[in-house]
Each structure stands twice: as structure tokens, then as C-alpha cells.
Image (cartoon, rainbow, N blue to C red):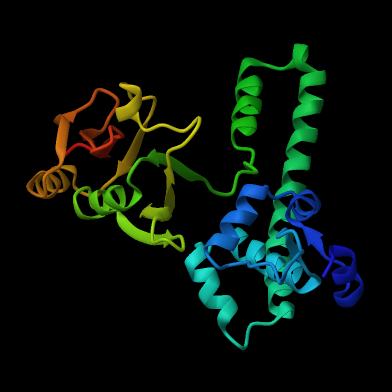
Length: 268
């Protein structure tokens, strides 16, 4: 059946690119949702293009509400599978979050207004008033809600296993394709999610590049105890536990594909 016929039979449908454009999401994100079974398009065109229906758009809205509220993707799938889940509940939760955001925005506008007035009269401000204005600027609420890191690996399964069983991170989901190859994996450090991404054109792990281009720093309760446990599990140490002049005690490790990890806590 042609795409035009499908539209006529089932109402409006959108290709993945059009849906990405309408929602502000990336095509890559929608492909990932499809790969992990979180949002599978209801239809396919005769040429194999993904076609998303209004029901798919409703499910995508629920996914984005839950994601904004901080739920990991695997937990979102569980929530959406529950029969009692209703769109009204998603809207209500979104409303609570929107009201909180609006409250933050109102305070932000008031602060910026005060600062704008102060800047217009900057010549008449004392040094203490300038300091107070700078402090107020630094206290402005950030619009950033959360962050997800992404690290590149040749062997996602081995990397996931090493990070969990050697370096002590929490295991997240591991997703495989129809051939059983791992195409996406996640680990967590507290509430922070780290995606493990397969290497490819433009994406290479440090071991292939011959140099590290970044590092991941994680706070732990007891850095020495964490060091002992990880080294007993076979961690490759690049820095023994040491008290740093910037106020932390830390140690460093390199994983099998060259990614560098540092763990720190306040010095004893």
C-alpha cells in the first residue's frame, strides 16, 4: 500500500524526518527509540520508510514527559506498559513541571530586571553593590535539567562488563540487534547516565586514536576503599590515591579501550 493510501486509511502519518522536525528531536533519537522497542512506528510504507501515526505521537509525548521528569528509558517502557497509564496523568505531571518552570522563569525575569536597572546606573553603584549584583547573576537558575555522557567503544558488551564489575558503576540496559550484536548500552554513576556508543566513522575510542581526549570524574564515598575494591577486580591504575591541592583525594584508572576514569572524595 502506498504512503498516500495509508494516510487516507489511517489518518495523518509522519515519516521519521518529519516527526523529528515537528518535535525538535533528532532522527537519531527516534531511531534509537525504535531499536529499543520504546517507540516503534505503527506502519511502514511500501518502500520501507517508518510512518508514525497520531497514536505514536501520543506515545512519544508520554515518553518525553517521563524523560523530562528524570525516568530512565527502561523504566519508561515499564510505566507505559501499565494498563492504568493514561494521557491525562501525563498532562497532569507535565503541568506540575511546567508550573515549576514558569515559577523559575518569573524569578529569573525579576532578577534580570533588577540587574538591568543596576547596570544602567552602574556609575552610581558602590563596589559592594557591584559584588552583590555579580553574586545575584551567579545565582540565576540554570535552564539545564540534566546531562548524559556518551563514550565510544569497539566492544560495548566488554566495556559494559568492565565498567560494572571492575570500576563499580551501576548496570544499565544493554540492547542488541536481530543478530545479537550490542548496539547500545548504559551504565550509571548515581543519577548520571553514561551511554556506551559503538565506534564508527567519526567515532573512535582512545585506544584507536592513541590518546585520551577526555575523562570521566565520579564522586565516591570512600576513595581508598573504592580503589582497593577496583584494583582487586583488576583495574588498570594510572594514578594512585592522592590528596590533590584542589581539595579532593582521588585515584585514576584506564579501561581496556583507553577511556580514563577518575574517582574522588573529600580528603580524610
